[in-house]
Image 1: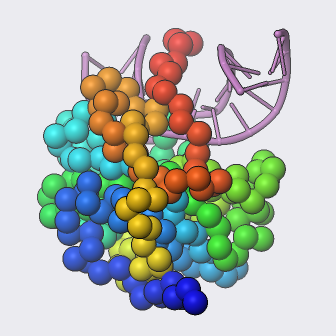
Image 2 (image 1 turned 180 degrees about the vertical axis):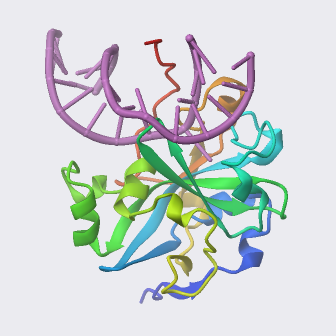
Length: 212
DNA sequence: CAGCGGATATTCT
DNA sequence: GAATATCCGCTGA
């Protein structure tokens, strides 16, 4: 028989490790988003690591700004940013406090509250698309900048909690280049996903925009 | 399926 | 002014 997923929250110590250790270890973990209409739960299937001020792909590469200040705070907190004038993306801060590393949550499988996620994701043609992509994931879970700086290690019932769930065996974890990252930062194979999972987003190389 | 334009916050030049 | 850790709806094979 299969052991039931562990419903206890991840600890501060879980996130207080190098981001390249934490990122693959997050696959199979469960996010609980508490909304006024009820809980939405998601099993993580795809993430990307961003390693603070050493990493040209990271928002923290050029130091602290008003937008990225949460990345410099305690591990286990939620960093939400607004991008392309329309979308939110959600990260979990990792590494020692001040390291400014984080894991971008790119995709997952909705395991609870699918009707709430569908109501927010009207363009999704099936449930596998509800959270296939970082902005889709944030939209499905009703995540916006109101969640920026909240503690993902806090108990279930707070706005967002990450549970132990069921970790993914290393032989089922694949990795490759990060999606949509420009310049030197694109070379690192710091995107991690679960092999053969239908909710993982398609890889897209970086495409520069044309001028208006 | 590939390619494109549009939405327009945030940061850096 | 220009680029970006994106997605959507449209076009045309």
